[in-house]
Amino acid sequence: MWSGRFRELLDRDFEQWQRSIVFDWRLLPQEVAASKAHASALCAAQILTEIETAQIRTALDAIAADHASEAGQALVRNHPSAEDIHHFVELSLVERVGSLGLKLHTGRSRNEQIATDLRLYVRAQIDRVVKALAAWASALVAQAHAAGESVMPSYTHMQRAEPVLVAHWLLAYVEMILRDASRLVDCSKRLNRCPLGSGAVAGATLKLDRSVASNELGFTAPSSNSMDATSDRDFILEYLHALTSVGLHLSRFAEEITLFATAEFGFVILPEAFSTGSSAMPQKKNPDLTELIRAKVGRIHGAAQAVTLQLKGLPLAYNKDMQETQEPAFSVDFVPAMLTLVARFTAALQFNRERMNDAAQSGYLNAMAAATYLVHKGVPFRTAHEKIGNAVRFALEKGVELGDLTLGELREFGPEFDQDFFSAISLSATLDCHDVTGGTARARVQQALASASDRIAALVTLNAREAVHVGA
Image (cartoon, rainbow, N blue to C red; front, side, top):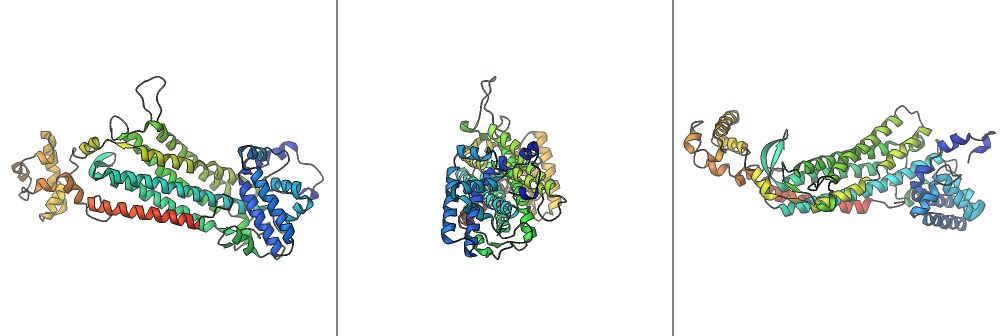
């Protein structure tokens, strides 16, 4: 591709070591799509005739079709002479259409090719991840509906705090997922500028109409600066950072399910289809899926850190260092499949509602509602907090719950206590006193469920409308 300047052959080991075809073979569909779009731009500039353009585009489609299978992909990455995916496609094109294939590189550079291919690839991956996130959120909402008015303890500092609806707990993860999806959609919007026509660094030397290729590939517009377009890998970094957030939320969910499935909690019954046993202990049912999720999330964080270090301190414009940003981007390809498994796992989960309900009604989880009762009686909250704290300590010493104390015993802590105290600290009242937007009151959770379903539906519609599957 560039041997005219050189008298010596490359060192054989160095030539093999610097090849990227061993990993950028994944970009074959994107390289074909971008090459077809460039052919259209060359045709519009009258560099190629319509007949030549049709021949090239047909041959490119054939290349993509021939190598779409796993066997075809293996042939690509093991090609003996192709340095990278761009070289492979050019060699394959020349095999099919002869010297006409050499015309396709007119007016472009590998620098803009890889920048375009990677944008197409990341955009398609974002579409897959967002789709999988929507499926997981839908599974959580379905479980929340099925949970009805089932109750569980909430935790702060891993100590029981207040009762909440099981649906409220599940919807907390839906909120995380929707934020994750919005970050990815925003990333997709920012990366959606077409580098084709940027040349190696200063722009194409032919007067190409850059909107031709940009429109064909579904980009919003051509990129605004050729130096930035060919050297920008921010979008990979942003994509990986968005995935680190997805990973964090996956890991938190996995950790809670792992804990809740233990005999000590007993809140969750693991689905057998997603669990394994022990080769030594016949009674075991191990949460392998959630444990593996916790582990695999580390790979996402590592990829983001690697790209950060690779880009740090690079001068404009393209540098070979940027080749090393590809493998981290490819290394997180497992995320959509992992999310798909989590969605199916979530749908198959069973909850021990009786155990959760019992846990929510012991340990003085209605103490906050009790303090609120006193507030409604005109007691300042700090004073109410102290009075209920003293009542809790007294109940602890007696080995009973707040609701088991007599009215006479309660009035030792203040004259404000009356018979209506006991209904005010019942489970339903304790839930419903959190009657604010985002609270666990039963009516509020029903509203939140409806809202979550609408937002997930909007996300799916947005994903279908905005996602461009060129090269997917």
